[in-house]
Amino acid sequence: MPLTSPTDLLRAARADDAGVGAFNVIQLEHAEAIVAGAEAAGLPVVLQLSENTVHYHRGLAGIGSACLAVAAQASVPVVVHLDHAEDEDLVAAAVELGFPSVMFDASTLPYAENVSRTADVVRRCHARGVAVEAELGEIGGKDGAHAPGVRTDPAEAARFVEATGVDSLAVAVGTSHAMADRSAVVDLELVGRLAAAVPVPLVLHGSSGVDDPGLRAAVRAGISKVNIATRLNQVMTAAVRAVLSADPQVSDPRRYLGPGRDAVADEVTTLLRLLRGVTD
Image 1: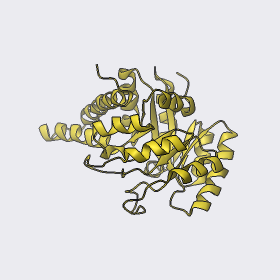
Image 2: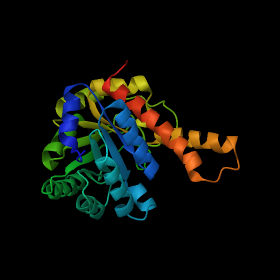
Image 3: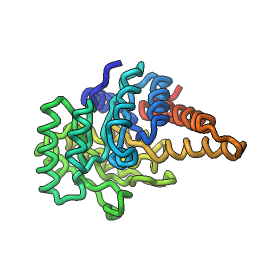
């Protein structure tokens, strides 16, 4: 299936009180599992590569091309997205490689600089038909940059979107990246006010820290894209650990990465159905 742009996908989800799952790829098995899970659910999905993962793979070309290839072979719509890029050169590289969607994250900068740099990225990306996500109100858990209790202000968010022209906006509403438990509480009242004030789809980062009822409530309140990474890593690691614990002599990575991939695919199917509100 041809690569998908997120713009119509997210706007349709918002209109239907549904959420689109966006899952982070660390290695090829993640990409394969995420697409397999989406195909089992019969629902669209977003494959995300973070700037940190790009550095881990020593560049975008290899892992980025692999994600594009996996997406192109899928039987459901797949968006390949660059996540949390703080480097404009990396954004440009993703556009050149063929990514239809990028996130430029200047949220740790002063507001005026965030607006200026984001608007410049948007102009260049839109000229190539690429959608841009940005962030306002830092999301916690990223190198200590976020002070507890920070929230995105709806009026400021509306001004930011108008000034930058971004296609979607990640907002701070109570979640934090890399949470190992699901104790985060989403400020649903704030999500509702943001959804009323901001004319583009809202994105929830740090969603692994939210329990299933909380995720569904966040979508109903106005979240359109739900980013999940740590939860899938926990599932994969548990499956790999179970294989290695049962047979310490295993040395072929396919013997343990395969079950890890299958476990992630099952979790993706469950999450996509949850975000869509499918209960049967």
